[in-house]
Image 1 (cartoon, rainbow, N blue to C red):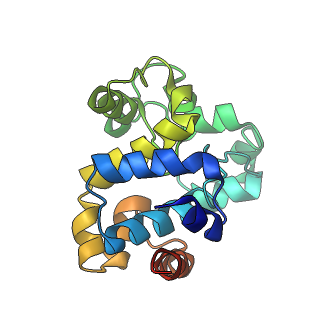
Image 2 (spheres, rainbow, N blue to C red):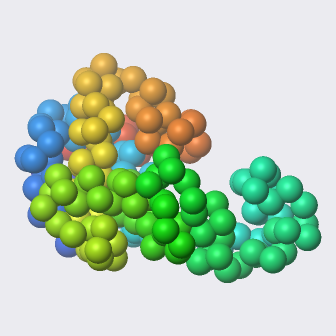
Length: 198
C-alpha cells in the first residue's frame, strides 16, 4: 500500500507503516485480503480514528445494549455515563476474557483498530508480539500496536481464508459477534478495492 492509496481512503498517513508492517507479518498479501482488512478495520475504528471503546452510555443505552446486566432504570442510572464503572460491570469477573482481578474490566477494555478486550487477549497478543500489553494496555493505542494487534486477531480468527472466499458475513461475525454494521463494512471493502486497483 502506498501513501496515495492511503490518502484516497481518507486514512491519516501515520498509518502507512503500521498497516504495511501488519500486512507483511500476517500474510495479508493479496488485494482480497488487504481490502477486507482495510474495510473491516475502517468500520471498527471510524476510519482509523477511534482506538478506544466508547463506554459513554446513558441509562437507556445500557438497558438496550446489556439488558441482562442493566435490567431496569434504577440499576442503569447508577452506571450511566461512567465508563470505568460500566467497563467493570460488563467485563469484570469474566473468566472468558481472563478478567479475574478487581478493575480488570476497565484496565482491559477495548483498544486498538479491532478492539482487543480482556486480560487474556492482552496477555496472549502481547506475548505473540513481544510487547507487555498486560502490564501497559495503553500501548495498544499507539498506531503500530493498534494495527499489529488487529493483525494478530485477524490471524487468530483465520480471516485471510474468509477474505480469499469473500465470505464477509462470517468474517464480520468473527470480528463483531454478529453482523452489526455489515452494509458499511461491505461499502468500505468495496472502496478499498477501488483504491487499491487504481
